[in-house]
Length: 398
Length: 220
Image (cartoon, each protein chain N blue to C red):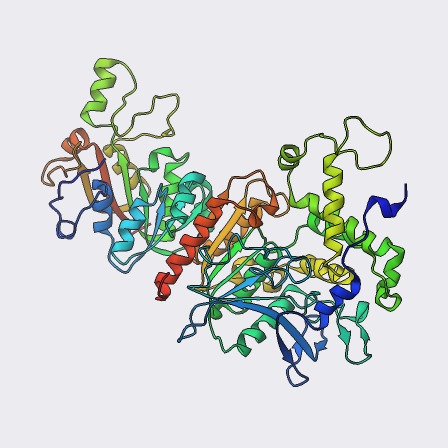
């Protein structure tokens, strides 16, 4: 059995994907040499660009802007058809007409993170100094770097204070970084299924994923672009491993159990006999159609480095001292990647800073992925939190 | 308890009482408008909503996940937490008032909880069911069983209330930890205040529940 059979080749070519890298089907903000992005690693990234989508209208006093921060493998297409996969927006359950974050009330902004591969500058972009793809020459970026870039975009859009910053997982990390770095620019913050630092177990899973990518001979030390190929097998394995961490034992059991895939009896081979194997292979192969392998390395690294307390003398509460932002923290009972205990530690720090915070743990067996799924209780809470904040802010229609 | 009668207390009588509980209205009346308040054991957030109508910045802690989520879904700033373990996370003087409404008897360490209330709040408002109430006494004395009332319907083996006390017991505890009682009101079975000019033993006998406004004592 060949390895090509075990993980199907992507249906979408690297060329189709790379079109989105440099010339995305989105709005793009270009930042020239006069406006470099100062990175935590000490490098000034310049020039660079940020690809973003907006929904709804900015009101006259510019007070209704909501920034959505995407997770590790998300992008700016939060509430529209994806230009590569043709699938619905990744958070259409929360964002869109009639949803808790409704473009009728809010000016919604979602940008691709720095280091991403859907139009914001990242390792798959062309390095203007060489005319070639950056690859591993791209500087290592952090969550604070992503947020700094977003703040430059928000400045460019002429917005001083965001009504809300919203995100789950790595998006939630950005929400927290926004409040720590720019407390006066964030009126309310909705941080979902996240933590103020990446745990040792999570770093370990990321390392597993990166090693899978690097073990693929097609990776070519990160220089696969020069060879016109993409390490899709390594990246697919990385995605498969990560995907398990997004689910839960109970959810996998409920969805697949030990059921067989299109067969009654085991084949006594390494074919995908079990439905759960077939599902994971599909997850791996569909992911590589839309994602760049080096970008995956950089973004997982950014999450690993995240630790807000470490940036504030080891005391988390100091990061939020005197903050006026209204917080809502949400966790899910079966999320073992960002367990409730992490949210609780954040809430304790916010309490110690006398911040206004709501914290709800939602019961579900769907694991970390629950934040992207149809969980009505989560929507009710999100809607009520934003409405209450909107009322306090004097927003019409909230 | 949904008492429609208007309490003979200034402040409350002038406002529409709605369906708010008598003890909640009494508590709300004790809080100065514009204050910052923490409601420990806030349940479904009824008291916080009442406080909000009076322009008070209210926060809540609630033990049950269902209660918390209902509060958050009302737009209230409520977190899941335990009065026994989570009050330590709050800094000194974080609030003008900390309210413990019908929750003291369910804590593991009422004395430490009370001390924490007056550390993080400049004032505390504590309400609790009075186990010295005549009906309670009668059930134990004549019936020979642990008392149960409309407001405390649980049996001894499934109640969350593990530290019942009488008004007299509570007053003793306040003296012991040097807490100053600024105001105290006992409510009878119908949510009406027991007249103020009567002696303590009458309160302890006829008060079905009590509400105390406390502050830090001087001296120690």
